[in-house]
Length: 254
Image (tube, rainbow, N blue to C red):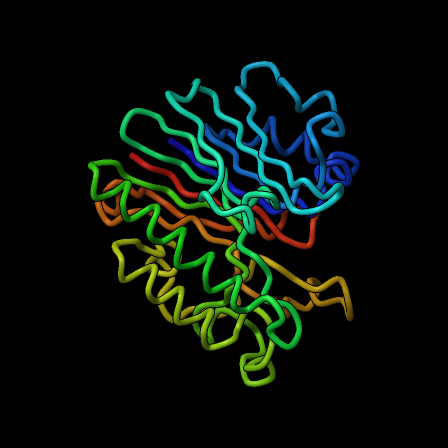
C-alpha cells in the first residue's frame, strides 16, 4: 500500500496549479489531504467522485477554512470523522478510514499561532488524537497517521531552529506532545531512514524565496504504529512538487 499526504492549502487553488495531474500520476492507494478550505459543494467536480477512487471529505463549518479529505482505490470498511470534541471537529481536522485492521488517518493539527494563542487547544488536540490512536492499537488495529502536524519535532526539522524557539510549531509544549505521541507506540519512519540529515523540509514560507533557498520546516509526517514499522519499505518527501506551500510526503508498506 502506498499512502501519500499533502496539505494543499486550498483544494480549489491546488487544482488550478496542477493538482489533478499529480493526483492521477501519484501511484498511491490512499491520498490524504489537509486544509482543503472547501465544503463539498465547493470541491472541484473532478474530485467529488473521481473515477477509480472512493472520496471522503470532512470540511470545516467555517467556509474557506481548514478541512480534510481522503481518497482510496479500495472502498474502506469504515469511515470515521473527528475526535468527539467540537473544538476540533467543527474545523474538520481528523478523517479516518479503516481497511481491515488498518486505519489510515488524515489529520490537520491546529496551528498554535503567534504568541501561543491556540497553544492550549493544540496541546489538547495532540493529547486526544494520541489517546484515540493508541486505543485503536490496543484494540488490535494498526494506524498510519498522515498529515500536517504543524510541529517541527527536533532542531534538525527546521532550517533556523535558533531563531524560532518562540515560533508556532516549535514551542516546547508542541515538541513535547510529539515526543509523547511517539512514546505511545508510533514511529516517525522518515526520520528513522534519514537520521541526522538536515535539509528535509515539507513547508516553506511564501516570503523571501524561502523554497528556492530551502529555508523550511518539516511539519508534515506519515507516522505509523510500531507494529507496522517492519512493513515500511520506504518513506519520502516530494519537494519538487509545487502547487502549495507544503509538499507531498508518503510511505510505502509491504
